Image (tube, rainbow, N blue to C red; front, side):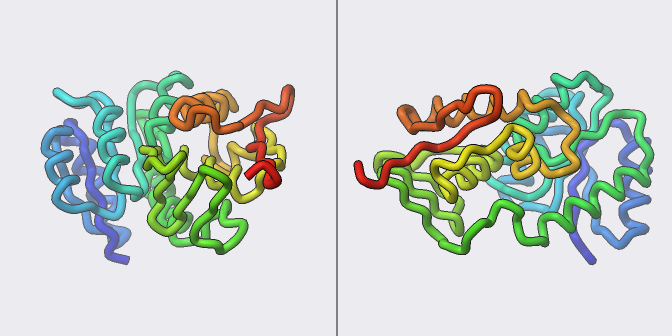
Length: 230
């Protein structure tokens, strides 16, 4: 197995327990006590997965998650004593792949780690076709490099923003329901509300001004594209 996991947690007891369970399953584990040290590590090299606490001294886990997503697409699990739905949605929107509330069972955490590695190794659910570059008028999506260009300008997008945009662009003019987008972008085990879809679309519209992601009222969204006008 030998996947390397970084755990960023200021509670020594939790760090040691989680490390013991993960190492028993064959994972390599590095322990970090604060986000600043973790961010320094992230800039020089990446593990295969991050497990981040939210309530850290100095920079919190949310900010660290956001920064990691600027340089890496590896799975991120957030662990936190905050159990409100809005906290979970914020973590997922910033780029985490899972959110586990404290207190938690170390066995459950190990199960989630294995599931995320399995999902990362599998073919992404949203790969509807194998074309490496999608071009729709002034929109260009390089699936291999995971780079988006809009009106000849490179656009900075998060992992989930890229995934949703790719889904729309591979099937232009097709309406996707909110529930369908939740499954395609967040996975079929996502526990949050479909408000996450609306928030993600709102951010894409802001970053790609005038890109016609249209609302299908009472249902979901579609990317309108008229080939004859290109």
